[in-house]
Image (cartoon, rainbow, N blue to C red; front, side):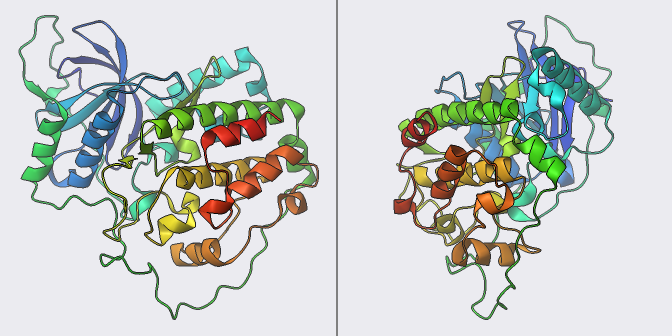
Length: 387
């Protein structure tokens, strides 16, 4: 049973749950504004790394304002539970929005219905939704122990309430520090060395299975191709804005891109974002951050990162959208990293002979191994997409 009150917020319903916490639809009792409230678990399940990520997400976004970037409102601690209040985006993840199985999403009415059904399914689900699992593909450490605030579930909401919470990123960081854990993002090599041993067996080349004729027909529907282009253009606009403010996202993937019922794209989850000015070697401690499938070669190697690292991830997403397959498939992270570093992706036209040529050309340039060989800015990608 969800709590009725979390600090200054009245909880209306559950939007999704994962190993590190839960997201609620809530209303700010001070202003009456709707919000999505991300609440982390506490006690033995509290992950100081997740708390610091939440504080960093607030600090990253609090001064940004762009129609394609999610807004944040507040962060703090309520009875030992770190929370982040952000813009409520009623929508679908990019993967769901561009799924092959739902032709109805091409109409506004069908999209609105799908969003409502998705919301109901999240609220009723007893198991975590895959797209909400923030954790951690990036570190491989499955956090367990979903939680409820049963102790507070009977608390009566009131418009006149005592201040029983602390606000501000520092309150969240202080809670994480109290757990006496180091501030890490993921574990890999602590020395900054190559993330896998030199004697790793060479993986046998594996050509992704070709989509079936039915899949190809769905992939190449003119309406869907148009939606892909529109989403990519909006994503480029969000990245141009973010990069222009000296930020790189570092964890771009379909579940971090939402599309609302007006088909407006929002870039989400800035918990791993980094200001380039903080230091040149954003992975100088040798720790990998991000999601394996979408990592650029320089990210895997622990080299300096810049905006082109995010653009590589955009290329992986675009390749998946036009072929129905990831550019590199493997059974383990090591095998995947090896392929990313040493092999070329199967040309998209071999998997989807009727794929949009422009989208294919852009995707392949974005996933080139060397950053200098890619498009250099999100603005360049945008211009290429509107040729």
